Length: 254
Image (cartoon, rainbow, N blue to C red):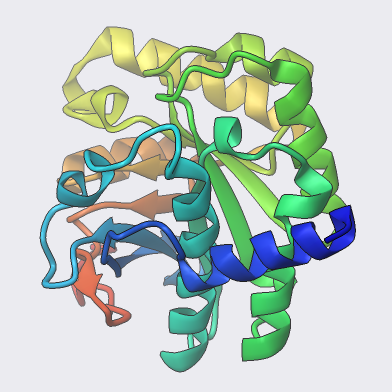
């Protein structure tokens, strides 16, 4: 078997989830655009097969299974989004340390998008800042390869992980998602307000969109909107729906 055959076999195994022995599914939570008062995207959130919490799946991963899991997640999300006739973007989390060669590892996503008829331009990959990124050059190569194929990228949990503003100095994603610890009670917390105002200014100058995640109250929402943030995610707008695309609460923008 030559290297090309081996690569193609590996890709098929990733699509099938071979060697994982872990069953899982997804819940979807809307990201809303408060200016248009509509859903901008749905984030796919890992769940057990009967809607068990994400940790019941993620805690079973190890260094040998994380790559296959990462690849299988992409395929399942694209398939489910197509089956649910998702009319907007879909956000997919990925493990940068599990991607060994971006040009090869993206093949499963491209194949799934083609097979299920889901536009690559509506896929947003989120890299969690909670995973320590040991090789920034490798992450930059991943982002560049994804952009070649029309994918967009986001840094999840921004402000709570390993990289922060240092990461933005090396590459600029399409979006950052403010960590919910920064969001919680921001309407009455001056230090958090100052930090978020600074991030808004930086992202404005770098043309990076901001998503405020974990928004739970009307007071948090209105303060963040007044600060210049227009994309939101959290219980104030909609809870995750297991294997469905939830609607926005009717009073969410009041």
